[in-house]
Image (tube, rainbow, N blue to C red; front, side, top):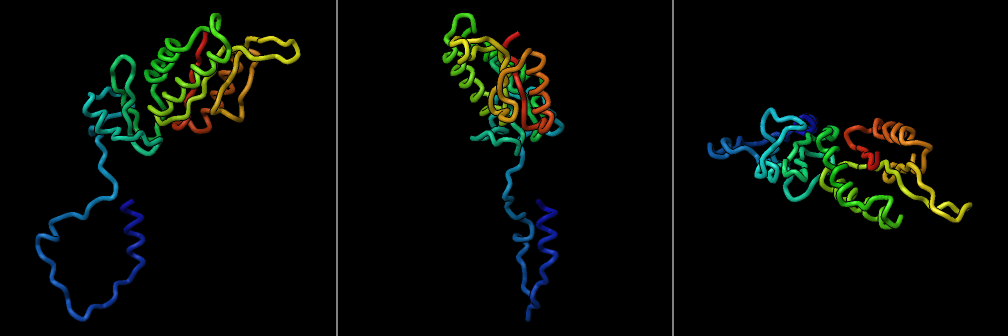
Length: 196
């Protein structure tokens, strides 16, 4: 930002002044206010580091701004994990997300298909909000089959991976498709596998 500002100002020639203006000493000692707040991230900290609650609160502020600043993701274990701006989510965060979803989403064997989808979607949205990243689930779910008028079970890739949505012949095929989707923007996208 400073470089762009300097370049902009360098192109403007100041108008000549008839009289030089005096500048008070106190004015020169006070830096101009910055339009961008300084980062609360500790010096030398890196993605995956644990930070305390006070530091996490200072880093996050009142709003998780996707990709534009560092953030601290609170795991269900209580730890705050630092994620630097525009860097992929660390494995510890992804593993925690999967555990949290599996705890709160009903099992496919004893849930109505719609209940399962609604619960998964709610958890996924909460994760996206806390991480500032788009998260696509890979899950073993039920889908209505018009040809047989019944539900089929299979491996699916979900939103927001809109260009690869749908059912896949195997878990490996679904994971490969979503990994390719993530690879196009690894710092902005993540995926989670919800069933083994």
